[in-house]
Length: 341
Ligand SMILES: C[S@@+](CC[C@H](N)C(=O)[O-])C[C@H]1O[C@@H](n2cnc3c(N)ncnc32)[C@H](O)[C@@H]1O
Image (cartoon, rainbow, N blue to C red):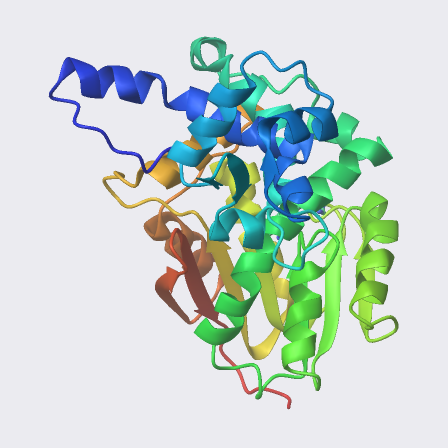
């Protein structure tokens, strides 16, 4: 949706942009109904899809043809099948499935964006229930962790590639590491590392499930606590991804200082987030920053300059940044001192 830049010098282009939410909802509904998953079994006619998904039938051809027009389905001889991207990323149960993000987006972000006006007027989140209500509800938390898995599934290989200091380290800690999908992938790529995740205690059963799925039970450890109030376990590499943007500037500074304490001498803090340029124009990242307006009390994306300020104030000796994938920025903050390993 956000990258469909239309020609806004024309009325038609402006109307196209105003209707972009319709395309997004057509896709979110397709994931919700399991359309791409059912089409993995083979291309199907409209009546077959109607029957399989238990739909009424009215609007069905338009919806399917819209998805064809969006490049998510292909139509041949009256049968609809998955386009390659949809078949790779939107079939439930497949390793590359990113639908967890879309499922939660459909339930949480989509309605919240309908209340953007209220959010801008009041500065208050609009997602219906706050994070701490959500985290006490295992069903909602299950959706949330799937959403985070969808993001780390794509980012983990890029982070592993982008940072070249894994071999020199003995341990890695992911702060706000959710159920540990990122750490599991790092430890699988660099089996000599001891992996640790620090997150809220409610995440523990989801972590155990993920570690077992990766065959890493006992080789990765979960530490439950509140990263503002409790000490973090020490590690040579501390990762903090997509976590600082949940909080306001003062809280981000406090978390970076907390992370500094956890990094062993000579180690690094790796922060990745959808960071903003000094004069932000990156549409995708501005959208995520507004997501934070809608779903958190004080969160937003932030600039590399802000993070550098927090990191230097905390005591890090050097701070470098580089692109990570299409939208994220990786900031490498090095702590002085001699590495122990
Ligand atoms: C947006 S998610 C980021 C997950 C993952 N790092 C990623 O890259 O997608 C933020 C994580 O911070 C955790 N979190 C939020 N508040 C926390 C707190 N006070 N203490 C510890 N973890 C917390 C959440 O449970 C969640 O897993």
